Image (cartoon, rainbow, N blue to C red; front, side, top):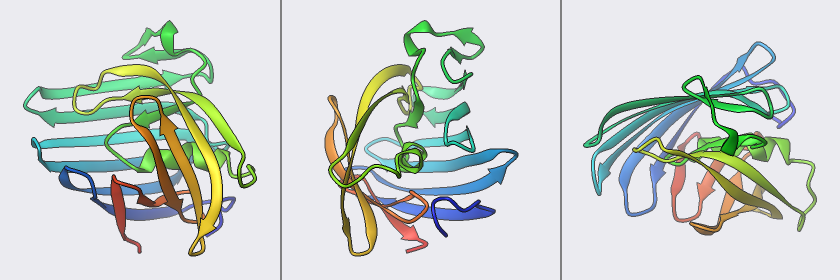
Length: 195
């Protein structure tokens, strides 16, 4: 399926490749005028955490709403983010510090990287885009403004390649399928289904 084709519903699963022991299951489905990204992350180490999320985007791969839930030793938490494309609210309260952010990134999952990658598919190898995102920490669900950079790389083994980076976490290579969904996220997660 090409990046510009409409998705009916597709399922994905990843295994963590970092210091955490865990798995992810997610699906991407068509909704009226856009897509819905949903998933569950379950981590056993270093501490037990579960996280579920839903992110709705427009046909142009622009987020409009995200709900993230986490269950950990911190308790059970939920946060809802909404945006009109410029103004952002958290749990119904305007959050001016996030205004102008173009994306939402749920820290626990490789799935939300697909949202900006789909939108940036026009970039040529070597070109980059710097964007501001509403970054959701897991399991605290604290939301903050973060700058992220995506750079298009030469394809690897038939997969599109990107370098993703931010100041706090560094830079990592992402290999993605034709729909922009991560197959391999360097040092973080490897897709196990579909391979």
